[in-house]
Amino acid sequence: MIKKFMIIAAIIAFFAYIELSTFTLMTLLAAASHEFGHFIAIRVCGVKVRKVKLLTLGADISLGGRLLSYKQTLVISLSGVITNFLLSAVFFWISEAGSYGRYFAICNLMLGLFNLFPIKSLDGGEALACLLHMGLPLTIAEKITTTISHIALTFLWMLSVYLLIWSAGRLSLFLLCGYLFSTIVWKANTS
Image (cartoon, rainbow, N blue to C red; front, side, top):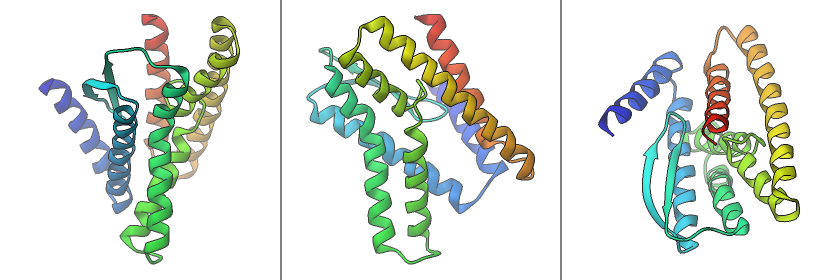
């Protein structure tokens, strides 16, 4: 566990070194708020948290006990995004332009929007899968979710290459796309 934590800390430190800014630090705080939103929704649904594993980008929360309905899974998957949007609205309302509060509002808004991408590793992909599973047979829902996920990730990766070329070598989005791709491939190989 300590080894994984050290790897995660090293990756975060690397990104902070590459793009050290107030925006980076506010993004990390917004990400922690996002994960806390998931945790609160899990507890409200009456489910016990068995284990929380910190990942490079976010956390993996293992649930204990009973199986969740698709509606509960949908609520839990969107709770982080809702938390980001609520914090964004509050900090836009209470802070002045150019302040740290406004940066925090922007970070929450961007993180919430990013997590709505319908990519399997993100909350939007999980929400899409839940919605499709509620109305379609499992195999059809999975095929649709996988196809949409690949299309969205391809679009995001093309955007990252464009930004990499035109933004003086900012690697963050490009590396993030690589990470998302690898998690999708890893989940497909372990399923």
